[in-house]
Length: 432
Image 1 (tube, rainbow, N blue to C red):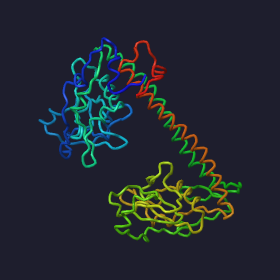
Image 2: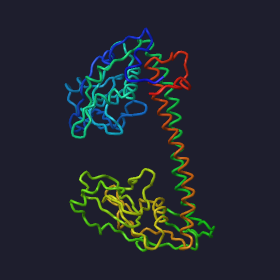
Image 3: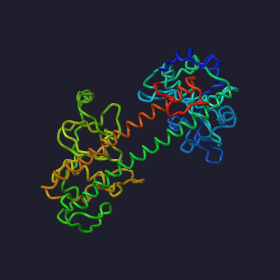
Image 4: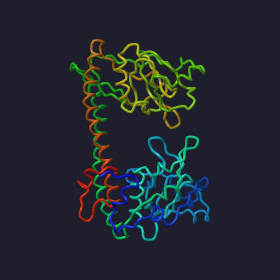
């Protein structure tokens, strides 16, 4: 059975009431941003969309900023346990506006002016309502109520609340919520384990490269050398400052003309730690290079790490260091830069940026020329195995997310009786 936005209502249990989403809501009011923190103990948390747990549909209070809200406004906007917070403005192509999360906190808090506080109707279980909103979001009801202006998505809450819906009585709502709490917790545990495995795979990649750098593919005898980030290197390798084996091109960038910038949407890939809207800080390169994010963030490709080797024409943002390898295989240099301690070449008040001056003095272990390609090929082969495992794990994460959404939708639309069901198999044949 496939659940559509409204077609399921006819097949809902006969005893369920037919109405609209607004029948489940007592009140809906926009939030407030308040003023700068007073820092006198009176400040309250202000929940933004950035503070949403978008998987568990709960609020993450700890990271929310403190704001000063006067007494009158606080009485109007104060969140109560069981309220929902609905994102009304923001979103994006891959994450449309309209998600709602449940507030269960005990401390004083409000939601921002880009959100709305939703209070459940008296005979509505707040957890059930949160699952209803999750199902509606998955069905696309919120997307149908979006108004796009100047690149920002705004939700027409009135149109969304007018969407037809069917719902059971309070006791059955609680049974459904209890069931979903238990089953989604089980699914979330599986997701956490897969995330942990992904993290282990990434750390394994780094440890693998370190092992190669320390012992060499040919099993050379190692001597102890304190590099701060690499405790050993093979005895027949050289230790060379980075400036002797690569040329930093950061100072050789030629700004693009307006015509050249207009071609920014061309066929060449883009790499940078951040995008600039008008692209005035983008530069075009046409040679093999090693790219390194200046703030340690990974660059444009999620499959790549902090540093990587690129060939062919590429656009590079000025937030990436550009290195031309001169005395080492560029692919190997990229692997080395992925595992060295970036703290050694970071500067600034909070040591947040990798500097050219800091990079120049990095001691890089350089194997003999006849070993470099062989090392790279071996590392690439091992990385290919890791990539296959990563693809499989990400596929499992995607399937778990689909199962979670399908389970929630099936339960709140009455496709099965939760008192006799198990979430392990109730969604077979059901799509969200």
